[in-house]
Image (tube, rainbow, N blue to C red; front, side):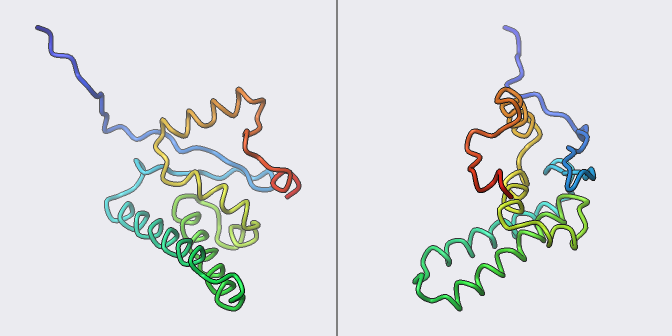
Length: 139
């Protein structure tokens, strides 16, 4: 009986992915580019983002002051995630609108294979995501 591998792992690190902001190229790292400490920090920041989002969901929408405070914290966490996983400077990440920050954060933490599949799917759709709203297109 032949012994077949159920998974093929490699210690090689894949190249980073490229994205642009105002026509300037930047690099997006994946989890495979991180040290153990960086990966732990990534998981901590991701959990913090999730925790804040849960607080926003549970908050009375009439409590505008607290809602603003929570969203400011959320935006700060997202900038931390972006600057950790990319070489985008903080001042540029801060200038991105919240929806654009969110789009970039959604790519953070994905494995290389998932990113490739996502980009292949976008190429199949002529470069547009299926769920891209009119608001996103206008930003």
